[in-house]
Amino acid sequence: MPAHNSLLATQESATVSAISRYIAHSLVTIQSEHPEWIAEKYRKTQWAKPDFQSILIEKLTKRLKVAIDTDSRLRCAKKYLEILLIPEFINSPQFSKLFAKIQQLAESQNSAAKSNNSVSPTLPNPPAHQTASPTVGIAILLLDVENLQLNIETEKFLEGISLYPIQIKVAFANWRSMGKKDAEFHERGYQLIHVPPGKDSADLKMATVGASIFVHYPTAKEIFVCSSDRALTHLSNTLQAHGLTVFQVRKQADKIIVLNSRTGQLETHYLTSKPEIPPIEQLVIQLKQLIKKEQERTSNQWVKISTISALFRETYGLALNQVVAPHLLGTKTRDIFLKYPTEFVVHKPSETSQAYVTIFEVKLSPKPPILNNPEILKNSIAAPSSLKAINSFEDLERALVKIVRDLTGNSPENYVFLSNVGSEFHRQYGQQITQIIKDFNLSRKFPKFLQSCESLQLKKAEKGWQVSLK
Image (cartoon, rainbow, N blue to C red; front, side, top):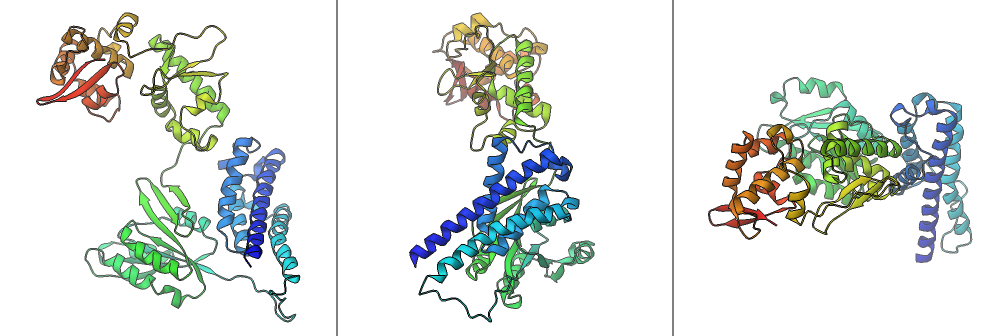
């Protein structure tokens, strides 16, 4: 029996892999011959690139492996295609041919299983009069309206995750305190359950009703427990123990997080629109432009990667690591520069220092910076002469290094209180140092900023923080 189970698992894995590859390759063909059939959101994605193919196949494989049978797997594959392709194509004869191939691949596992069963004395064939009936199931959505509110777009996102249609929706709240929300949710097909005022009343009622909901709806296969209150974890465990797939839905900042309690898989839905992630070739061009612009502004060939990340967010409205992640799975931000050694050169002076980048050129690259030596810093770049000359983190760091050097007599062994440094900065530049830090959107306090400076070191004294040269 274990050998039989192992064989089935191997066949299932091969089936999932075949379906995932077929969908990925079909998308490449469609984009090449009929790009208008692809949903507008994904039309510019270069699906033929190996990186995008790998990402798509990996995501498809994860989704399909969650499916418990062939029917569920086919529903999952169709839902994914409905996201990637326009409705007109989904309803066309061409799509029917494409999906027929997916059905053929999905059913190949059943054929193999039947073949193995026919030679197994312990697994007899069913009687001729018995026929397999398709798996019937529904999904149920339980919503604590006082704790979390779902709009129609988010509901559609949840429907895209579910392998079964969401046919039952129940909303819990003290409706007397919710204004006209009861009419809105009723219009959207929710069953409304009223609870009296009080802390956690909606959660407790939701847990009570939810714990036995599978008795009233025996065809339920999946349940969405929608509440940011983690106390409902007990409800999720109870439902999962009765064989249901539970999705825990909660809000985190500007996004909805959905956890599949059975597989541990996370799905994220952003409540605000996100800027479009550029293709990797365009990203390389954008990074080179930012580096050149910073080089011209500072007259330094080497630029901190952290500075480029800040400039990228400011220019394009996206965090650089957020853009890199879809192109290079499981990598750090600086790996985008390492991946293109013909375009960029990366240098890290020490294990504890920040990394620097410059554009690769045929001519001899500039000597990498060594910030651990204050004398080199002092002789190479002058401190800003006025407030208008402080336009970057590096400019601010040079200004502070000069002040600390003057106050300590250029000795790394001498320390000065931060209050003295702040006063001297205000005297020389006419503005508080804390305000400058806020203007750069550093979201950190003065001591934290000094700790990030390569040429300065801090220590905590009895009367407050002190700083000196390294």
